[in-house]
Amino acid sequence: MGSALVAVVVTSGVLTACGSDSNRGGAPTAAVSAGPASTVDCGGKNALTAEGSTAQQNAVALFNQVWGQLCPGKRLSYNATGSGAGREQFIAGNVDFAGADSPLVADQIGPAAARCKGNPAWDLPLVFGPVALVYNLTGVSTLVVSGDALAKIFSGAITMWNDPMLAALNRGVALPDTKITPIYRVDSSGTTDNVQKYLTVAAPESWTRGVGTEFQGGVGEGAQRSAGVILAVQATPGAIGYVEKGFADQAGVPYAQIDTGNGGVALTNDTARKAIAAAEFVASGNDLVLDLNSMYGTHEPGAYPLVLATYEIVCSKGYDQDTAAAIKSFLSVAADNGQTGLLSAGYVPLPDKVKGRLVTAINALQ
Image (tube, rainbow, N blue to C red):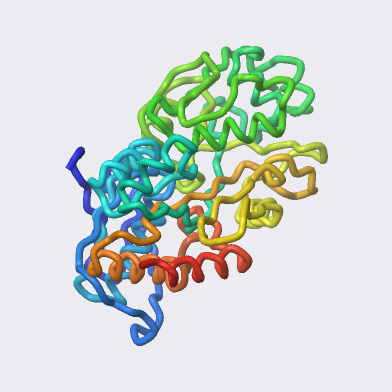
């Protein structure tokens, strides 16, 4: 293996949804009802391996728990190293599938197909993860930003918290005369990619740095993985960073509202779900890449636009029979019974229009 695997294995009826990127530690527990075992095909090998997104690791832990409940003896070892590393390890054949907050990019499609013995790899969206803009400002319990203000913060055009643009968005709030320190993911991150895609759509004149899994803003301080962003923000007065909502909730750090033109919208399950309704598929077929631009650019009142879709990247066919059967079993459980409990872990369950296409694609895996 190219890197050590950290097992996300649950052997009891209670999930430990951890806030660290090692899937260890004293995080909250959440009971999950798995449903009747008779509805699940438990074929294939008992042990699967996967690597990638830190944003989805707590969702994977939930899915893994339910899979183990419904199919005793089944387990997934998931290494949360970041989306870029996950895609690389999948292409290299070192893991059975990858978790990624961004789908395969153009120059990875061919190598992924080669890894799949000449068959295309599919990007399968399994869960939606709202991205929280976590910050450290003593005495500021409610903070509002806009896409334009955020673009200027992460590109260095706004450097102080009492900047007139921020003051206008936060009328009645005494913003301090404090330097802003943007905190970004220094590792290859699908969360970074989604944040930069959001800025490109929401503030095209202010964010001209481009997109990708590497941060392009050129300012601030870098941190490794989601847990590192949380720690850096907590340790740095005036800091602002981006992490999946579940990590922010577990750490108890505040996060900003986003104003898309109708006042600040707080990040909640309902406001994220309202934005997700605007997402569409890029194409027909079973490679289920989503076009999130309409969501990122929404001006719908009460919609929080900064939400990522997190994918499992799998071979459409080309696995040995035992591996294919186990992957289908795991993904089927995750897409159905596993969606229970996601809200309490900071995620948004699959909308019906996504779930229907996803189940069809899972059933088509060979």
